[in-house]
Image 1 (cartoon, rainbow, N blue to C red):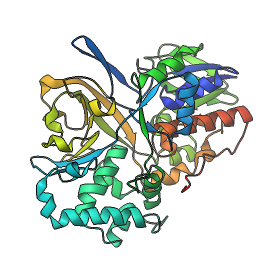
Image 2 (image 1 turned 30 degrees about the vertical axis):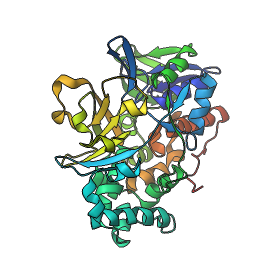
Image 3 (image 1 turned 180 degrees about the vertical axis):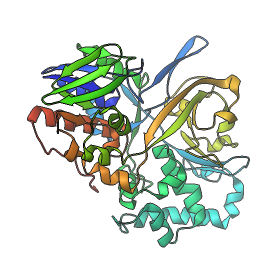
Image 4 (image 1 turned 90 degrees about the vertical axis):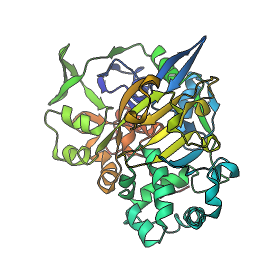
Length: 420
């Protein structure tokens, strides 16, 4: 068959990789950059060059089996990394990190702070009871309120943690279904101190796996050319671009964001409108820079992920890339979300925009309707937004579409999110 894939992020790349042997595939990407949220920048530092990631950075050996399998198939090397988390207060000495006892009490005043000690107690209580209390009908915010967790714990631990993971405004975390939030934490070892998975980064930057995929890809790639409209005419798909006009295909795979797919369809069905339209997105500005003032005031609280409490909407997080990617440099390379006006302009290297799916009751419910729209009318949908929004989810979603196409399955379903 002749298949159009719209979007060259992880889902589109995996789908193209798996389908290229048996079908004629055309991969469309609106940007000049292949890889979507996989974005590695070559930073020159004296005689050295550092590959610094600003989008996809980390993965682990427990919940990324399909992505790991892909890396091993491509012989892409990866290395261990540290995944510590810190929280600090803008304009204050308040800070703590979970990397050591010294870092936990980086602000020595917390040794004598009852609210801080109660937060630590609430962390242990949450880790013990969240799975037991699991309620499919409750929002996460309702659960925290009914379970009488302290506001200190909510505002200074669990919301920053959730906002950092999903690059989301902290208030949006409260709207997540409790089941969605807790199962993710459980599966990723975040409900325990001792049984966490080993985390990794790709040795020469995440772009290494994209390069390896593209080196094996011998079919047509159209970059820097946005698809304008997709027409479905009886047994054929027409993909319209300004550069090439209408091109005819047997099937189309939307490997872009759900809202983008909906905008591209000339005549979406009611099921497509209600399903794809139920998943909102939040824009985040990522800044690659060397301004360490965005990290905690006490260097003993510096961690791989550093969340800052302030009044800015959206996630306010700084990744310490020297820790995450083991960069050997006298400069500290940081990637900060949504605080461009607080960064010294002379230390800004690059500014990139990313959109991330927002998971709430409507969008999580829409995930269950994948089989109602994918595989119908010669149209298929894949993307990380069908699960938890991460790289493994993008791979799993692509593999499901490939299986659906190769097997002609009309009702293939994504694997259930089980509590292991």
